[in-house]
Image (cartoon, rainbow, N blue to C red; front, side, top):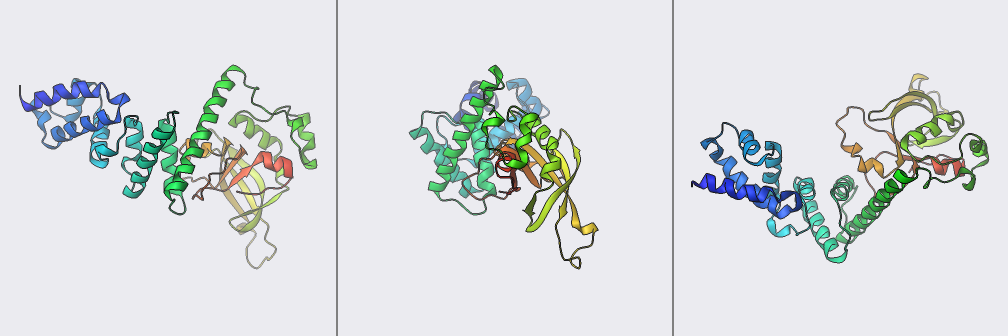
Length: 319
């Protein structure tokens, strides 16, 4: 048996375990890297993809992920509970952030019996990368706990929603609505329980909402018209009017601006859905949500309009 055949045999055993073990993925990546770098696969196959597909039933893309994990993350930093999805998510990060995340995940495993999933690690990575300033280990640890708490709440919400969609909805009559929005209870009995419901609520009350002013990019502004609403990101485009009193500063044309809107039932879903990483040429200028969960660190992200807060206070305050 040649060295190539021996390595292939070892890989068949390892790759069966990689879905449940980040360490096994690292070990598989080490061998795959050797075979790929020396082109040993050409002993039987024309391409590396043919080799991985035929021998292990995985695409070359997956094999390259294992190789990336091997190259980017030291084996002694990988715990028994870390999975491929966790490791590949953070493999390409800056070393200082990578070490910080791996250290916090290790502490979390030691202190908590609750297993974190790939979504939590991904969101944690995104927020750290978008933070306006670096976080201390203590601050990063608190951030991770905050993210995990919200993730657990969201998972519980989804489970309840499957059984009884209205179970988690607040009756609007129990919310202290501002006088400008008291009539809302004639149209709606419950708070929105989906993003679509939020969009409907916003559009129904747009004639009232457009009467409120807010500070956008340091300029007093107001909503003027809904240009469109669609299913893909970003969800909508709205025309806003700059409330400029000095006519010498802006022309009438300059007083208006089109901004892109993303609706989220909860503001934190903006991170969960990875919208800030979107490759779309149309960036999001504002998040409109029903409830707001402010991340305990300043991040580079769009301003947030909380509709529930607006209905209670009668004012638009961007967060």
